[in-house]
Each structure stands twice: as structure tokens, then as C-alpha cells.
Image (cartoon, rainbow, N blue to C red; front, side, top):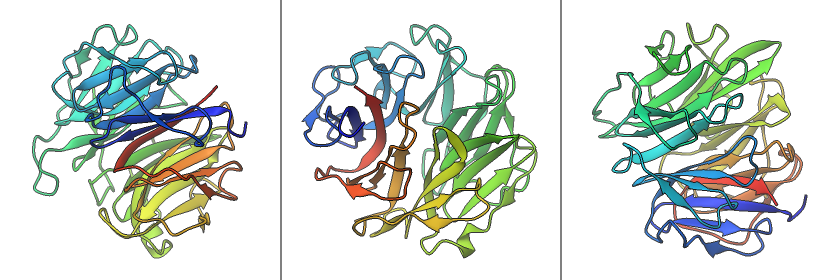
Length: 323
């Protein structure tokens, strides 16, 4: 699939950018989003390969043409920062969104109408000021289970499709949640990344245990998590020297997080690696971005990487879609 895919990048302050040829050429998305938009989240529809949702500083947007244009979905989030979007893979009409200030919303009709969900979240925190939802995922082993992570307020879980929520933090010694991933390979394991550790739960969040990555990773600041689309045992962790740091690295595990190796990049990143993009259309194709605008692509699930030529301002969201 070399070059035959579209990349969409969400930035802070310069809107969204699109490459229809795998990173060879770029243009700013001008229809629906402005050049000043802050794009925090990008999520591709699980069954409509050219439908894309964007979370921004003024609500949630939808594209049906592969990111070439967007239309805002009227919602209670119009005046909020939308950081995360998750779509139910079994019933894609059900969409969840997480915001700053920290709150959760749900649509059951593909974004036409939204309701705020009954979940208590902290309203302020000395570490980050106004907390935000930094992780949101529909459990692939049970689509009625939804996971949400809050910076800095721990993990929330719903087992009834979002109707009710529990705060589950037993064993989480760091409540500064950065991302969540769920691995399904015989048993279900939930992973969550924090600034200096990755925690795992094998009992659906009732208890958590640190994996000890602070003693394994040279760069211990952990941000985004990702999985190979056809192999949940292959995991990627975005790391760096600090939140606003000067270098980064990608750690890869082939055994669900029991052991790790550095996935070598062709150049030293200019800042921490921040996020990943994967797609079932090509499980081997993994994209990664640094905090300050660099893009990397691997065609072989992290065995090798190349740096894309174009660089941006701060990147917060990344996605790719087949053409």
C-alpha cells in the first residue's frame, strides 16, 4: 500500500493537514476547519473507510470524504475542547467523546444528537489546571464496556454502554492517565500509560499492577499506546525525556507488554514521541508523531521507520485511511 493512503494530522493552532499520497505532498484542510483550529483528536470510522471524526477547540466535526472537508456536528460540546473520540465497532452509530473540562458525551445516531453522561470527574487539579479526558476506548472484547482516562483523575469504566460509570484506581499509584489500550488474546488485559509507568489489569480494572517500565525504558516519559491492528500482543509506546522535552523514542513489545525493545528511528526525534496511527486496512503500516511536529512511518510494524519530509507545529492527533 506504499503511498496509496491518506494521512490526516491535527495540530495546535494551524488546523488539520492532509496528505493523499502517504506523506509526499500536503495541504491544509480549508473546508469546515480554520487555519487557527486546534485539533486534539482524530478517529476513523470502523466500517466507512473515508469517514473521519475530529475533536477540536470548538466541538466535534465529521468528514465523509477522507478529511478533505469537515462539517461541525451540533452538540453540547460546541464550546468545549474535544480531546478524544471512540466509536463502537459493533454499532458504529454509537459514538463517545471526551472533553476538557473533563466530561463524557454519547451519541446513538452517528453524531446527530448528543447527551452528557453521568460520570463524576474532578473539575480542577494543580498539576494541569483544568483536567481533560486523554484516553477513551470501546473494549474490543465487550462493546458494552467503555474505558476513559483522565489527566489527572484516574480511570473510569462503564459496563453498560455508558449509562453508568465507576472510578477504578486500586493499584494505580499514578492517576495522571495518558492513554489506554486493551489486548485480547485468550484473556483480556487493559493497559494504561502514565508519565513514568504503564499499568496492567487482568481483571477488567478491579486491580492494577505496574509493569516496571521505569526500570526498562531509557526515556521514561510515556504518552501514547498503540497496537498492531491484527495482533494485539504487538504494542507500541510513545516515550520521551519529559512532557516538554528534547528527544523521544518508540518502545515495542511483541508479547503483550511482558518485554520491550527499542524500535529504532532513522533520526533522533526533536521532542517526545506523542501518538500513533494504525488501521486494519494494512496492519503493518504504523505512523508516529513527535510532540513538535515530526512524522515517522513504518511499513513493517516497527521493524524499520522512515521520517517524512514535512514538519508541523505541535501535533496532537494523527490518523491514516486507505485511498
